[in-house]
Length: 497
Image (cartoon, rainbow, N blue to C red):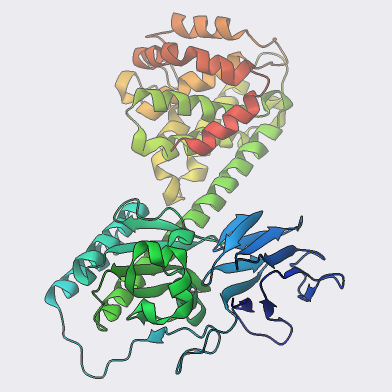
């Protein structure tokens, strides 16, 4: 009965090959007590045990390591392996093969697989439908709003040209290095990369950073032994890495089952579609990073504003949470959640221009002091107006103290002259003001604050907004009174929109 071998995917003098005969067991780690010494700090001193029973079944067990073991990209405590599977100890990846598997001529040294870069011996036939599909994908990518939908369309158009039996766009998790399917055809064909009939192809394409095609997967002895290959009946595979500026971010995969093989020129079309997908993914990541940093900046501004007065600490965050509850329940503002959130977080930013003697005064304000306090809405509006990405939030920042009856400030607007976001936020702002302590009064109970909101229905507040409040009054109370209210509000602001 032949033994099995675990060979490092990326060869290096310090990385040993692990050969196992039937009935043999070896420990792997960076400590001298390990049977196989892998000198890398990402491994624990005793990281894992690999063993083969008398029937030739290869097993692996985690020995309580810090960074775990990953089988075909998925973390596991123990697993059975077959040739073609990969095992990652910490950050060092090994691939399983038969110990006596012969090398294939002209194959890459690292993997000894039959994967070959597509070579075109003559000019490829230009497919008009393929070019039209690529142009359409280019246009959509330039103006995409919904990344998942765009990736689905990329895969649909690829399928129409390449005609695979199965296809997927895979992404690399930047934190764990594991790969997960993002878009799949047919839907549900894969739920994890470990189910792929040719995950070896994916790994090789990512390692080489080039498109690869396997014309006949049956010629590779390791892939022949993979249970997923036998189960799926894969014959031919194309895999193209999705390359970002800093390296691979995923892969585009397609395979054929049965007896049909991919024509060599189809890999070129797959490469073109993969280029679109990679550009879209990297652009989306930039947008996500920018949005995350921008939101963190807004939250920092809100905390800085509230910190000037210990009695209003957390006020902006609470107003944002209450505003999100009203907006979500209304059903009208699905596309405007972020605009409302930004306005609520920054609605009091103009208070940086109000003197401390006014802002922190414990008694009632005289007319001059009240005018200085009321100026915070115009100060805030003028501060934020030069920032184009906050333009949609300005009406609520300026108008959240306007009144339905026209007696508010700064512009004495009335009724629907007041922006809808400002009318909504006025309810959230007033509720939090009433249920928060002030130097000159104690916080009102939630029920009393709700009663006062209803009393001013059609006077200070838009009747429609009070109707909305009545529908979510209990949720307001929970966000105010529950022991974990702060965590609930933080989760709400993360999840809505």
